[in-house]
Image (cartoon, rainbow, N blue to C red; front, side, top):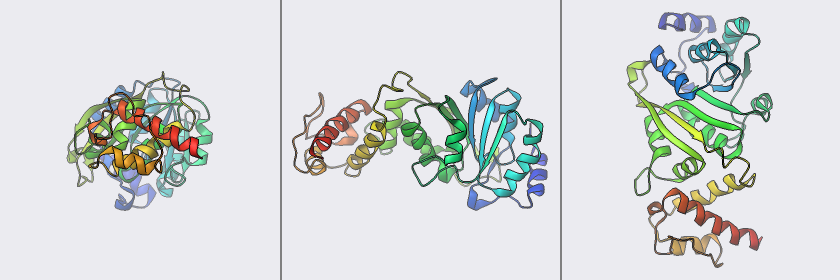
Length: 288
C-alpha cells in the first residue's frame, strides 16, 4: 500500500512533482484501488498490462496478488524509480517498459506487444486520461487476446462507452465496445480521491470481452468496422440512405433486418449498426 507520504517520497526520488502534461493525478484511496483489482478478477499467475503506473500504487496491489505485470511508463524518472523499488522487490513478476504505450494512435508500442505475445491478458490501470480512448480502442479491435479492461478514466469517457442508442453520447466507441463485450460502471470517483485533484470527474469502468467472438471474426474486421461506424456517426443526424450511398459510391447495399434508408444511425442499437457495417463492407470490398 502506498500512502500519500510515500507517493511524495517516490516523486522526490524521481526529482519532480506531478507532471500536469502527463496527466499525473495519483489515486490515493487504497479502498478504490482494491475495488478495481477485485473487479478485474486477476490473481496469481495472470498476465496484466498496466499503463501509466506512476509511483506504483496500483502495481503493488497487483504484485501482492501474484500477478505478472507489464508496466509501461512514459515518465523516464518514474520508470527509473519503479525499477529501483518494485523492480528490485519483484524481479520475477514485474516487467517495466519505458516509453509511450502506443506507436501512433492505433498500434501498441512494439516492445509492449512483444512482451505480451499471444498470451491472454487483462489491462488494469489508472489510465492517463489523454491516452485512454485510443489505448482502449486499440486493445478492443486489434488484440483479441485482451480478455478485459478495468480502468480509471474520465467519467464522460465511461459514459460514451456505455451509451445506448438515441443518447447524445452514443457513437462509434459505444457500438464497438458493446458488440465486442460488456461494459459496466465499477465506481464513481470524487476529485479528492486523487492527488493532486483533477479538474474533471472520474470513474472506474470494467469491460469484459465476449470470448465467443475472439477468433470468430476476421482478423481485420473490427478495425474496418470501427472505421465504417465512425463514418456513419459523422453524419449522425442525416438519413442513412444518402449517407450509405455516398460511402459505397452509389453501389447497392442490402439493408439488414430492422434498418432502412430513412433511419438515422444514432437510432440503431449496436447490433444493427454492426449488421449495416457488414453490408457496407460487402459492397466496398467487392468494388475494390
